[in-house]
Every structure is written in structure tokens, then in C-alpha cells.
Amino acid sequence: MAAQKDLWDAIVIGAGIQGCFTAYHLAKHRKRVLLLEQFFLPHSRGSSHGQSRIIRKAYLEDFYTQMMHECYQIWAQLEHEAGTQLYRQTGLLLLGMKENQELKTIQANLSRQRVEHQCLSSEELKQRFPNIRLTRGEVGLLDNSGGVLYAYKALRALQDAVRQLGGIVHDGEKVVEINPGLLVKVKTTSRSYQAKSLVITAGPWTNQLLRPLGIELPLQTLRINVCYWRERVPGSYGVSQAFPCFLWLGLYPHHLYGLPAGEYPGLMKVSYHHGNHADPEERDCPTARADIRDVQIVSSFVRDHLPDLKPEPAVMESCMYTNTPDEHFILDCHPKYNNIVIGAGFSGHGFKLAPVVGKILYELSMKLTPSYDLAPFQISRFPSLGKAHL
Image 1 (cartoon, rainbow, N blue to C red):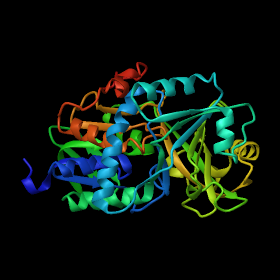
Image 2: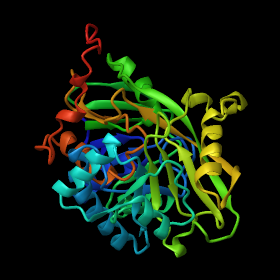
Image 3: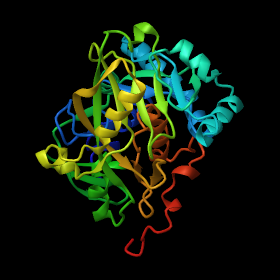
């Protein structure tokens, strides 16, 4: 048996937003936690970097809306602890045709869960948001709780909180080997550790860690172009003008989304919720930048619907999505090793939900009863997943 000082209650691999919140909940409950990150912090190689993310309660699925109620509380708690603003309420405007089924389902869900919202006709939209051009008579659904999360500030605040609560953060330490057992042994490029439980929140690198453990999840890694568009008149799409975040439904196979100008003065973030297949090890290579069909889609959208923006991107950044086939998360224990917990497949909408995801992963790692029904997030929902080699 290892000496007590060398034994961790939990090791968390991956210091993105999900791993950080998992470590935060572990440390809050006085668990001895080590958070490992392969890159030096801060970095822009994963899915959690950048300045901003949308936060909302507007979801098709009621289980996400239920989780978001608690997420807002934990975000507010972290904001208070950090003494810095992490959330700005702008409202989230969903736009689509009156008969759009997604729009109808989201509105019914918000009503059922008593989330404050407004339904706006085409005429009301034109009056309130004259710089949005409606080409097909779209209607709107405004989720009043929606807004902007300051992503980079949130990550930094969380990493600081983990340290202040007694957790240890080691960056620049890549995991090279995991040996399962009653105690899980983790070998990195620097040294070896052991813990009662292991939580893997490694984003695009998840399957690299899981394959030697006899499982491969149906994860698809996409490289997303994140685009910023210059306002013709500075401030016209800014938070100071009470311009909301938006999701535009039904125009293309995937949603378009936008956040009011803020992180770059005079530039509004508008992007396509999809991208191109990518190897996370090669995402910074020049060839990874070749396919910009998604940028062309957004450019024509901006030209047609946001006339006070210039229709050429002023700044282009990138991030990684790790998608599951149904775009719901994986929050589960390894089928064979129940002290190895997996959080993966956040599919480009996990940031806002990370406070509760981290709580669930903490609960799974400590063998506690989960606070939420995890049926939508279990590995077993993918029947094609081969387990013959387990």
C-alpha cells in the first residue's frame, strides 16, 4: 500500500472547464485531488479557451434545462468567490420560422419549467432589433436568463480556486500510461502517481487514453472556425445597445450563433455550430486551415441578416468540438473499471453546464448517488460499441 502522502483521492486528467469544475468540487469536499494538464496553462489547444461562451436555459431537452438551474447558482457562487464578473446577462434570442419544431419544443420546455421568456412576432422583432434583417418572416423566442460567460476568466478563477482549496494543479505533464486496479496508477512524462479514483476529461484526446483500457467511444473531433465580424457603426451590436446573444434555427443543417460585441471592441462573434474533421495533434498545422465552407456560410448569413456588420471576418480563431452521435454528453464509469470515470463528448455546448457536470463526475468518482438521472449520458446508449475485448 502506498504511503498516505503519495495517495490521491482522485486524479483528474484534463484542465479544461469540465476537469477544473470536477477538481473544484472534489477540493470543496476536502478530497485530495491532483489535476493534470498536458499543455502549459493557459493554452488554446482544446475546447475551453477563448473569451466568451453563451449561457442559456433554452434547450430542447428538459434534463439540460433542469441542470442549468443549478449551473447558474454555481456560476454565481464562483463569481462571488473569485470577486470578478464571469457572467453578463444579455438575453438569448432564438430565431426561426413559426412552424419550426425545435422552436416550439424549446418554448414548451421553458413554459413547463417556468423559465422567464417572451415570444416575439416578426413585427415585434423588427421594432426591438432593427439591425436584424428577417428575410422569411421569422419569429423570436427570448430566454431572458441567457447571456455571456467570460470563458478565459472563468477557467483562471476555477484553477485559482482549486489551488486555494488545497488541490494541486500540474500543467505541462502529459499522461503516457494508465494502469487500472484497486488503486489507479497514472504515469506522466514527469513521474508516476496513484489514486483511489481517476476522472478522464481529456476532450479530443479522450480515446487516446481509453484505447489501452479496452474501450473506444464514438467520438468525432471537429475543428471549429470562430469568426468575428466588424461593425460598420461601432456599438451597433454591442451589449451597451442591449443586443442579445442569438441562435438562428432552421436556415442550415446546423445552428448559427452570435454574441454581442465585447471581447474585441467593435467586433461581433458570429459562427456556425459545426466544423471540419480534425486530428487534435495536428490542429495547428497549415493544412488544418484549408476548409472554410463554414466561414462562407456565415459570411452569406451576415450579409443577408446582419446588415450593420461587414460580411468578411475580421478575426478568425479556432477551437475543438468533441461530438457524440447524439450530441449528448458521456458521464459514466468505465464498463470494467468502476473507479475510472469518463466525462466526454461535450459537443460544443458543455461549457455552460460544467458546474453540474463537474459535480456529477465528482459524485461518480466518490461512489455517491448522482444528483441527476444519468440515463441520457450513459455509454450503454451506444449499442454498437464493441466490448468484446473488455
